[in-house]
Image 1 (cartoon, one colour):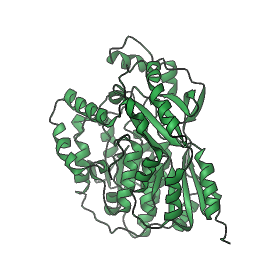
Image 2: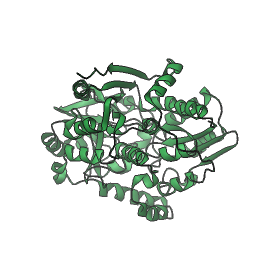
Image 3: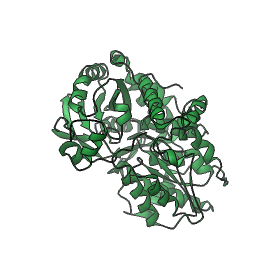
Amino acid sequence: MRSPRYVADFDSATGMLRATGRFLSGRDFPSLGLHPLLNLPGAAVNLLPEPLRKAVYVIGGWKEAVPPRRAGAFDAEALARWVTGQYPRRRYPAVAIGASNGAAVHLYAALGVPWLPQTFLIPVRQRTPLDQPTEALRAALGPAETILRRNPELQLHHMHDPVQDELMVRTMMYFRVKRQRLGEGYRRFLTERLAPGGTIIVMDCTATWATRRVADRHVFQAGAVGGVTEEEYYHGGDRGAPHLRRLSSKMRRWEPPQPDGRHPEAEWGFEPALLDDIVTLAHERHYRVVQVSFPGPQDLSPLVADLYRWWYLRRGLPADRLLVESFIMLEPWWALRTGSVPFWMVFNTDSSLSAAHAYLDSGDPFEEIYLMLFNHGVRSIGLAGIDQWQTLLSRARRRGAWVGADPGKFPSDFAQYARYNRDIRKIAARCPMPEPLSLAQLDAFLAEQGDRYPVRWAEILSPRPRP
């Protein structure tokens, strides 16, 4: 199903939703789940010089953004209908709801369950200087007020990240909306598709960010998870001035509106107000509720990777092939088909690289390591260089390989989006697709692991016997 006009196709929530929906429909995730004809222009982009490749990338993003005058067309319930329409019409033993997370996509694939995102990105066209976040906030007031007035179940986080999103923020505003109420569409899906006595899994990423409150249900967030810290955005640092000089800015540090509080991080954090509606519905319908809490988006990845390793060994399969993924570059169907252990990285920065190395340090070595890197077109602060990524591949005992990449064109290798699925099919191994893991098997794995991971699984509501 085509996404609504006002939702970004190249966003984390949209990509991860599509990957999950396609997996449950027995399909893989080529071209980020978009139309396969995009493979042709996608592959041709790399023939252009880098400035033109970036221009094509910017134009593609700008075409996804809606004009401010159309912000009022956003309808949270229409979006909910589109979300639930991604999944096959059948009963599920569990349904996940909440924060976006790439590692969690592999958890849903293992369990054979759908996921309802709390957060979505609405890109709104607007040209504002990268080095003037206050001006960006001022320009956003009208469209933001319109969206919130017409959708009272939402909270809006205006995220302005002039570093990782440098190419896109030139031409658009990033409105990330979070559900505070289930709404009719999500409620209907849970009551119709969740098996009697089933489990609602709440994905609770507790990451927060300094924010400025603009209005009721509207906050402004300067910066985002990536290569730059909150401290650097708000108070400057050695890395900010060179970056601004590269942009021909006269400023030597960003001067965003000073924060007056903290809120869930715009893209990855879970807004806990939604939990009240979930528990109320579960109590009415005799469902179980499990809350999965983790401090940052990257923190779920080692647990899910080890779950897959544990699962493969119990199926009598080798567990020595690692697939390292980045942002929305992920392939749940082919991970299982090739018997690969999935390790998801939130982005392509030093911190993600360090997390991948730390995972390799924590357990038995891998014979094969495959790497998919997200290309965002900018040599931004904190970006790990291609030589650094090569050190990750060199840790494979037998083979380390890129998936769909032209390393010399990173981070502007936009043709990779057309090639990664083709390359992952070249992995020779083939494993039968398993029956889904049961929740009891998952509980057994978690019991074996103890407190090894910074992830808390808590049953906050047990199903009551039906009268």
